Structures are given as C-alpha cells and as structure tokens.
Length: 404
Ligand SMILES: Cc1cc2nc3c(=O)[nH]c(=O)nc-3n(C[C@H](O)[C@H](O)[C@H](O)COP(=O)(O)O)c2cc1C
Image 1: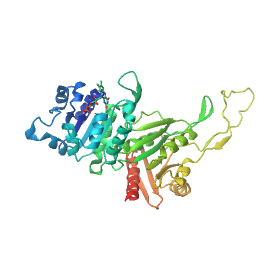
Image 2: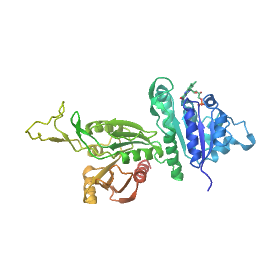
Image 3: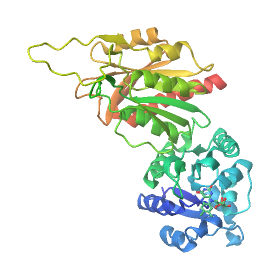
Image 4: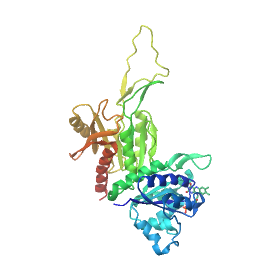
C-alpha cells in the first residue's frame, strides 16, 4: 500500500503560515501531500514554500498542467482533503458548490472525507451566512472543526482562531484511520461532560473526586473526528482544549447541570462522562474554617445534588435524543450497572470498575456498555479513545435508526 494521499487546501487567512507546520507534520508522518492554495492565500505564504515543503507542484488555477486535468485528478485521487485555514469565503464557496479555482474544483471532485478548519474574525464566524454554510457542509458529511478562542489577527481576541497545527493533524489522523467508516456523526450535535465536580466547603477547600477528564476528552476528540459538532462541559480538568470542540468550563455539580441543560436543547446525544458529586456541603463558609484549640472540628453536613443523568433521561430536550451515562463501581460492577441503567432511564450505561489505580487518570480503560434493549458489549482493555469509539458506534447506530 502506498502512502495515504492528502490534499492540503490553504485559503487566504492570516493563519496560512500555520499550515506550513501542518504540512510538515503530515509529510513527516508518512503522508503524500499535495498543497492546493488559493490565489488570495499566496499573499500570506508563497507557492515556493508549498512546493518545496511538499515536493509537489502547488498551483492555484485549473489552467496549469492542463494535460493532467488537475481539477479532476487531484480530488479523485485523495484519501483526505483538509482545508486549513478555511476562510469565510471558502466555506461559502464550498457550501454552494462554486468551482472557480483549483481548490474549489478539488472539493467537488473529492469523494474522500473532507475536513475544514475555519479561521476568521469572530464577527465573520458568527455571521448567520457563515453559520448556515457550516451547517450545510456538516449536513453533507464534511468535518468542520470549531475554531479556537484566543488572539486573532490584530489586538483583539475571541472565537475564530485556527487550532494548533498538531491538533488539526490529530483530527486528520483520526479521520483517515476511520477509512470507509467515514464521519458518521456529521451534522449531529453532541454534548459531553468530563472531569470531576468540586463542591466548595470554604474558600480553600472542596469535596472532589479523582476524575481526570481523560475519558470525556477522548469522547470529544473522537466525536469531532466523526464529524459531530461537540460541546464539552469540562469540570476542573487540567487538559488542553481538544481541537474543534466548544469547551464550557465549570466547577460544581450545579454549574455542570446548568451548562449541560443549556447545551442539550438541540443535542442529538448527551454523554455524561463527568464524575458529578452526589452531595455538597450544606453550608459554605465565607472564611477559611479554622482549627480551634481543644475543640473537635464541626461535622460537615451534606445535602444531595440533583441527579442530572436521571433528569436529562426523563425530560429529553428533543425527541429521540440519546442519553449515555457512566457508572464507576468498586464491586458487583455489572449488577450495580444494570440496576443503575433501569433507575436512570438512559439509553446506554458505560460501566467500569474503579479504584485508586484503575481508570482514574489512566490512559486506558475497559468497560461494558449496557444498553436499554438488554444488550451488553464488553470493550477490552485499551486506550480511552477505543472505548470512546465503541460508545459512538452504538450512539451512531441508534441515531441512524431514529432517522431511518
Ligand atoms: C490581512 C488579511 C487577513 C485576512 N484574514 C482572514 C481570515 O483569517 N479569515 C477569513 O475568512 N478571511 C480573511 N481575510 C479575507 C480573505 O483574504 C478574503 O475574503 C479572500 O477573498 C479569501 O479568498 P480565498 O477564500 O479564495 O482564499 C483576510 C484578508 C486580509 C487582507
């Protein structure tokens, strides 16, 4: 088998220079890359840079090397097309099927997965025209990764930044690895909670848990690579924002509930991977609780937190929404899991055994996915992304049945 063939489309945004790094990453990891820049993008990075770094010609027009019919051949031969940065203009052209240069022709002839990494000012990104173009592209099966939040071209900051080249590379790698399975969550919106809540006792102390957020982040990365629009509600994680994902940061169970319910309104699936505290201190002390000589500490009274999983399962924000829960158990794992699935009323429950050295913080996981129809799918010990993909396989199958 030859090297996977990647077309790197570069459109005319200030972030075009970051595509040099992406190109490097792709060629160094064994991909054959053909760069197709737009004429506007050559104002930022010249043709010579693309040709030298890729080892291939890097023309912008359909009128060059016409005998090779590049406007058809490049797209037909590709295993993946990634457009980074994708300008507002390029998203509009792609959504409407325009074909006035080599890149737009390539986008029409490609039958492989297509990834767009948009980058632009916040106003351009938020404009209804751009948002509708993005929705159209997603509905047709393209993977459009959400721009990052941060410093933009000038002194301003906001949403619209091109994610780091390494992160775009990781999305490309995952999309390529799926091969013919393709982006089966394209056009879907999924909400994922990750991490562990912290329930404050006083300004310096909290009740927390050992969740690192790694499983939830793996779910977010894999869902993005399968084409979903992803909202990740992250509770107290130290992990970097995954590329192409909207991240909402929260602290407590009540904040997590608000963020999940807020995002779930139009979600096709909600996956509750966060470890949410069942209880919180009944009283929050405004000042640090002090030791007092000769006195025992006052007992900490707890009150129940709302059961978010049961709540979203009982009151689905939209018809056919798939709800997935996690159950971390220390003993009688499966029996407890089955009872919890019935009690919570969710569609899938991912049950795993936990302990100080198991699951929490680890790069790997093993679990059984229990389904409301009684099926049980064991997922062997392996990377958290493998478990995440096994969960999405089941969610995607259910969503496909819903729309069939
Ligand atoms: C300095 C400068 C920076 C620009 N940055 C962006 C950008 O980040 N995103 C974007 O959508 N358009 C940006 N534009 C506007 C595009 O270059 C313009 O819409 C162009 O027509 C895009 O052509 P293309 O999509 O064929 O590459 C920028 C323009 C200039 C002059």
